[in-house]
Length: 228
Length: 371
Image (cartoon, rainbow over all chains, first blue to last red):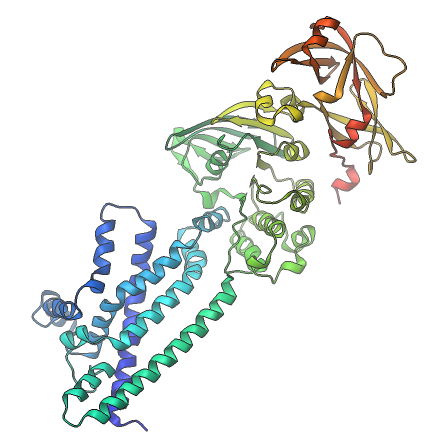
């Protein structure tokens, strides 16, 4: 039904979006926790910094990442020299660029759920003998689950559609970084690529719809578990 | 023995409190809203920073002079919050297990199975927290706090969020737990009737300071109580023993110091200790032994104090041996009868009023207590 190239684009899209979620989630949970619970001087600055990808053109984000993480960038050079890791123009790089772009959305969703947690519940856990780590793992984290899931779903969905940052930082390499939107873009640029473009658009459409239905189902189950 | 001597500062609010209380028993912290009751309770539990000293028997939780402050999670002070604070991601059983699991290395005096039975939680175990009524929530919170095998149990206005009918769903359980487990309890409340019903000692708190402290009987006579509870509830609290009960009429004879009074009392038996709240407005005074009255209880005594109350009323304290009564009379009556300290007097208590409003039963026989 799907051609080899289409399969490849779908597969890479899913990998890039999935990896981007795995990359951003732990950091997003930590940052959200700090933003909600900690009181320190640099908080407004951190808050603004986290939201930057939302207001910057994706191409700018990709370009900045290229400057920092490319083979000639400060961090990129060090990564390659010491760990042998190359990020620019790789699938992992595409995932990282996608993670950076969706990061504000993830943090926002987790933050909202964290703000909705009555701090008194942690106090109650304290009086029952639960230390700080115990409280986080057995009370705060489970209560954040709806937010974490919502954040992950949003990030995954946004990740499927990321274009600017990926093409700038990871380029458009078939079988490596050519995700669905990049394949679609390539098809549009190709003479007589109309049918291919239409098929890719339809594929994106189906993928999005499936994602929405799954997300709705998940949140319904969560609501049943945590109550109204 | 619970001994507390601490001060807390939170923004503009300062609290200093010195309390010595015998344990076990229920120590009530009573006062109007904003007096600092919850702050005091939080400080004892270690949930807000405080300086000073908190000690229960040989356990020292806070001692600023030696830089010692045990963190809340290690104090083993159970805390029942006004809003229950059950964990919404766990069911009732999960909430109870949460406490039980974290107390697994502590000496156990509360067993899960027995507690579930005592609090009537069996049918609720699989329920989600949001499916519980307010009264059920507090019962679960009580059970959860006890399952942490606490050395002290703090109840921070546990009934304040419940309506009157729901309170009755929780109050008897509190009495039951007090009698079953010998855990010292600190009961924070602004409801005078709850305090009278439960407390063995009362600490009056107002404006971040302790105004008075003592037994309910002693506190009921304390002038600083009068501004808190309002005129209607002013009266003396007396501990008494039921001597005999007339089964046909439910009229009981109760020993009060050296004298006896008769009052209507259902569900009691000879030997029961009861606590009577005799309102000042229900006590009349006579300077001669009255005759031909329908009033059953006429007690001889001596006036020990007269306190002005508002523009036209006077509160008269009558000593009857170890017991005291408060009587509200008009200023005119004081002048006409020439009432003054030292004057022998007869106090008339209307038995009917004892039964209707001015009476709190706290009857308990030894058989009930060991159940």
